[in-house]
Image 1 (cartoon, rainbow, N blue to C red):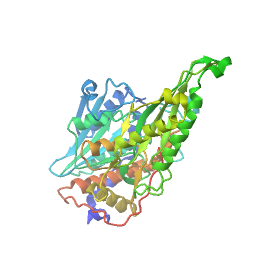
Image 2 (tube, rainbow, N blue to C red):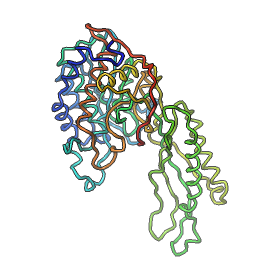
Image 3 (cartoon, helix red, strand yellow):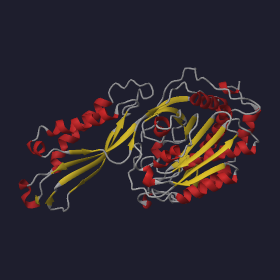
Image 4 (cartoon, rainbow, N blue to C red):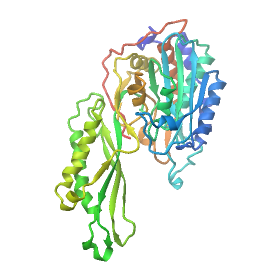
Length: 445
């Protein structure tokens, strides 16, 4: 049976062989050349919409109403959003199941360009790898999804259900584009968010809550340091207590999707600011960070645990008792999410991996936040994360991915779409994924 991970059907083989690698790379080169950072994603979205129309997809392009969207209870953002496009393309009859392939076009800034070996906004091929900002996170995988749709079309495959390609913005700073797409009415029976998971099928993702911690000090001339109160010094016991909180939350993790990970729910203090002048005792210290949370964890309780840890550390210091540190929950709030590993989207994808590669699909969780949580928690769509590349390559100079892996992803997605959505020649045959698989986890974000 085609759905059980056995041999490919003639339709599936035809679709897999129709994937055009050079066309995939040409589209990726166009998208890499567009510096689609926050609030500047529209040209990239227009290029994706152009590709969708060219391959015959029914395409929905709309201006996102951020004034309305920002009032939604699930809306979060690290930046002030004011414009952007939603883009969705669909193919198939729509009489059966709908499979969503989701990817985002926004990228993080390139940073200090001199640290790059290759220009960040030019696609460079070297030694079988592709380099450029967004090749792994995640314009490369989005191009693979579009290549899969084109392969189905070129192979003459008529889906009973529907294949929906969602190209979203704002994933890196909170998921506003994904929320807008769900609010537009674009949902389905299963979804694959093509994040870099090293080809691990991830039905679980940890969450990440952004916070701001402010520690008060007392300004004084640097020559009279003892007459001031240094907030950097006052922060040290708070830092130590937060590290202890992190250790406790990551001790004896029982979730099979994350078991064996040293730090699945990391607490990172990524940005610290203090002081206005080198010879002045700082008036305050501000720390901004991310707080890892587990799937199924009560978010109010998790936030309270961090707030209590800060208060406990402050209770042992006279100054901090009188000037309590303030904790604010600001910016992106990535809740965790989980899909039942027995869901058809997991089993069908696992079967396609086995049929094409002859190897058992790997199942595990990812430690980073992603748009999966909006599809699962708000859209009620069973969702997995799946794609090539190591997340360690993202958000850094010389971001790269294996070129052949993007082609392989397109082949896997094409076969998965045939099996999940069904065709006139062979109705949907869903793998129940009842084989024993060893959960493994992907690299940390």
